[in-house]
Length: 260
Image (tube, rainbow, N blue to C red):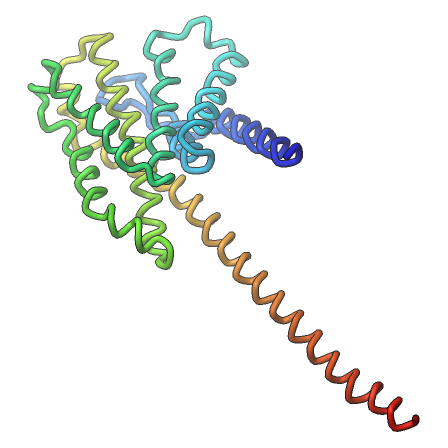
């Protein structure tokens, strides 16, 4: 038990360090048509951590990695309120993607749908009513494939990737919607600004979701192949032992019997 706990701690610490360095990766700049705004690549790692560590530990790893960067870089002293709250958005991305991977679909859908409902409760949501179209589309696709994912991910590599991609996409879109709502509440951004990126943000978020899904997919497929290969190796060893035993019986033992 002690060894298992030590390995888990090392695993989590490695995730925090990896998340920390992910912030130095290239960002999407000037989003929402505003100079100086950006989407950090850490959003991808929010989804990745959720899929690797689960909703609870994944959210902690994401938040800790982000907070570690802000503290060590000295930026926490000049962080805006939105930047402070961004820690929660990234953690939310981990929670949703982790819930999907853990097959706790009802909870994941509830959080995802609740964010869309909150958007439409705001004045800006009723004006920029087409803004969450991609969120609704992804939710509809997830519901459509949900039963197939539960059954076919056991045998189909294609469905494994689909389930991981949807988990990652729902994670980064949860971060997106939470951020959009908070940005409006803090800065009263005009509805036209949201409408101006209604076709842009789906491309950005799809790219951010693809890489963690692909990475986890490769890890799963490689791990699965290793397990299958190890099973074949064991069978080969047993076959060799059996052949060696037959040769020993036929050559050595029979010769001894004949001599006696």
